[in-house]
Image (cartoon, rainbow, N blue to C red; front, side, top):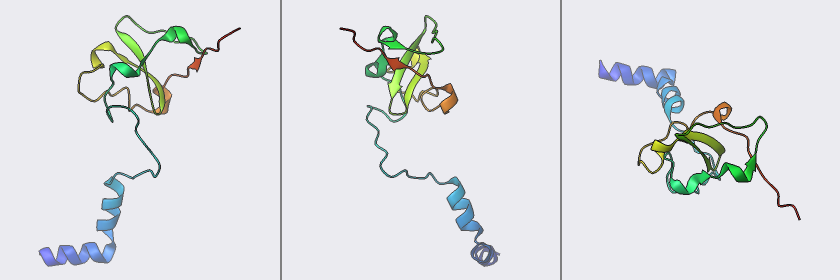
Length: 106
């Protein structure tokens, strides 16, 4: 029976299809410059006073804005330096915040 399954997988190429579908794809040239791959740390927190946005970003008392390699995102203060993955960090692009750094006027 086991030989028949192996033969079937080789004949139908189903093994390669399943392996390719569920394997992570490596993006050449992608470099993570933060301390962790998935968590949020205190050095990633930005001060909103130095940034502008359209529409205006409103955050709650228990929330902060962080910046990683993909841009800005809002997360809970309890997620900072918690040594756990932050679901807000790896959220899709729609959940990200568009901020622009304020320019210094002379």
